[in-house]
Length: 402
Ligand SMILES: *Cc1c(COP(=O)(O)O)cnc(C)c1O
Image 1: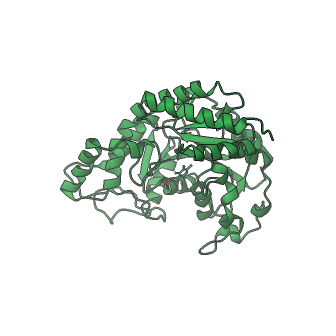
Image 2: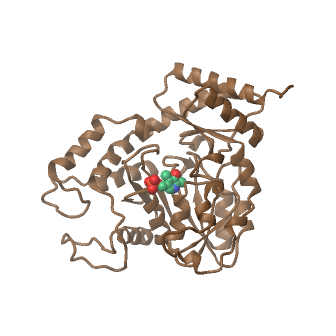
Image 3: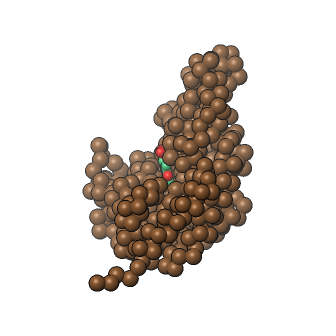
């Protein structure tokens, strides 16, 4: 979690620029702001890293994916294929724009598979909300193929895969729109923030208008612009954007260190019989924020987690039993417990979320343990960690004798 690992002079400098003028809003106040436009700079930094034609910063990764879906034309009653393994924000975004989540299987990439998508297609399928999980990437060629053949829209939630790529193209740019999160737990942080990217001019214009009450932002007279559409307030503040600018500049260095540290651990652990790693469709494009280890099965993974806890090895996630990232823990969704009625509660649903059978996803997440990679590890810390993990896995996989 480099966002929480690296924080210093650079971040303070950018924030101080804003503090000196007191212009905390991203729009207008041209003379008072002494040419400090932190949200715009944040967007430029994201464009530099991703190569996106357009980037638009908003208040969170959650509002970024909601805006990405809306700007791609997805709305009330549309069926959107989603994964059962993601931060719940992706599912909430689909529900809160009035669309209907349809769950499909993931595979050992930890992302939706083309086969999984094909199995849940209906005549009402409008889009796929593809989530690139744990710093890696989905199997893009196969997924693009299905979307193209079926004429469905692809939107990417790359909330935790900023700076990951597939065959030289950054994830987030394969679909009509894509989003990144810069919350406190991502590769770089703005405190709270998200960025939407697209190469589609019309989608960009919709996104930047939608995320600010429909203002078209033409001219310099705040409030007197045209409002071509209804929107809402998903604006990022200049203070958060300032942190995002400094943090995003660190990302190329962070990725380099992450990759080195991950390769070190993989090399050390690859000796252990019985473990494998998650599949990266393009290993060279890994942002390397997680080392994703597969144990032989769920029971072996649970025993390994016990050993890791006994040995006080922190910094790993067992998503199968984690509160937020896997469908097994989403009772509120299965029972549709909401503050107020959603579109999904007004229409017949194509799936009964309580009775969903996703055996492949259960198997993949059951056997998965993800270790967060730190970019600040020393070689000694890496060696110690590898030795500890190795010892725990050996204990857990040792044949049980009476
Ligand atoms: C973190 C995350 C989000 C939400 O981002 P916030 O900035 O916390 O709102 C959305 N999708 C995925 C896949 C994430 O990991």
